[in-house]
Length: 339
Ligand SMILES: Nc1ncnc2c1ncn2[C@@H]1O[C@H](COP(=O)(O)OP(=O)(O)O)[C@@H](O)[C@H]1O
Ligand SMILES: [Mg+2]
Image 1: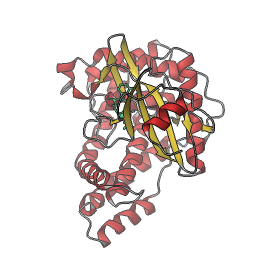
Image 2: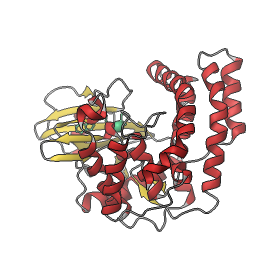
Image 3: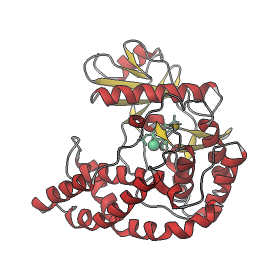
Image 4: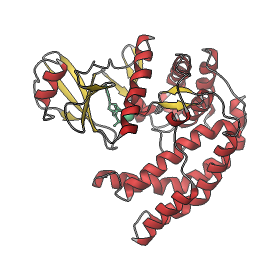
C-alpha cells in the first residue's frame, strides 16, 4: 500500500478525506505526524519505518501500556485499531512502512506557557502527578525487564562519537567535547543508583508540556511512542524537574511551584515513592543522556537525519553543553524538594 491519505483513510475506516493531509505543527521541532480531515472526523496520522526487532518490541510495549491506560480511563486521544497486518497500534501494510492513527483532540499543548508564573503550571502539574501515579499502578511491573529501559552508553562510546565529530571538524564537535565531563559524572550517579535496582513498571516515557493537551474537558496525555520500563519514583522526579521547561530536552529546573504540586499529587494518588537523595535523579539523567546521544547522532547525520533534524541535534547538543553542568551542580540542593 502506498501511504497516501486516501489509502490510509480507507485502510483505517476513516471515511473519505476532505482534502490533503497537512503536517502537524510541532513548535519548530521535527514531527512524523500529519492531520487528516475526513467525512468522519479529524485524525492524527503518524508514519514511521520499521527499523528492526527492537522497534517491533517497542511497538508491543506501547500497545500494552496505552491499551491498559485507555481502559483505565486515562484521558488521551483515542487510538484507532489498525487493520492487519498490525504491530501494536501500527498498521504495517508492506515492508518497513508503518502508519498509526489517533483521534484529533481540540486543544493546545502547554509549550506556549512562557514562564510557570504566567501560565500557572501548578494545575497541570497536579494532573500530571496523579496521572503518572495511575499509570504506575496499572500493573505492568511484571514482564518489564531490564531490556525495556533506557540503555546507558559507555564513556568509550561517547568518546567515539566525539572523535567522529572532531575528525570531520563538524560544528557540533566543541560542544560534544565539552559534554564529556558531565556525561562521566551523570553516568557514575546512574551506575551507583542502579547498584540496588528498584522495581520497574512501564511508564509513558515522554511526559512533558509538549505532550499534555489542555482541552475544554480537561487535560489529555498524548504521544505514547516513548513507553519504556523505569522506576516509577525516578520517572515522577524526572517529569517534575522537566515540567517547568517546554519539552523533555537537555535542561531541568528545580521550580518548587511545579515540582511540589506534581510530586504531592503523585504520592497522594498512591504512586510508589523513593528516597529523597540524588539517586532519585538517576532516571532523569539517564533520559537526558539518551536524548543527548540521539541529538548528537542527528547532528552527525546518523539515523538518516534530514537537514532539519541535523540542525535540531546541533542546537540541542550546544544547549546541553552550556546547561547540563548547572543541572548536575543543582541536584544536591534539589533533593530538598523531594521531601
Ligand atoms: N491527537 C491530537 N490532538 C491534538 N493535537 C495533537 C494531537 N497529537 C498531536 N498533537 C499536537 O502535535 C504536537 C506533536 O505531536 P506528537 O504526537 O507529540 O508527536 P512528536 O513525536 O512529533 O512530538 C503535539 O505537541 C500537539 O501539539
Ligand atoms: Mg510529542
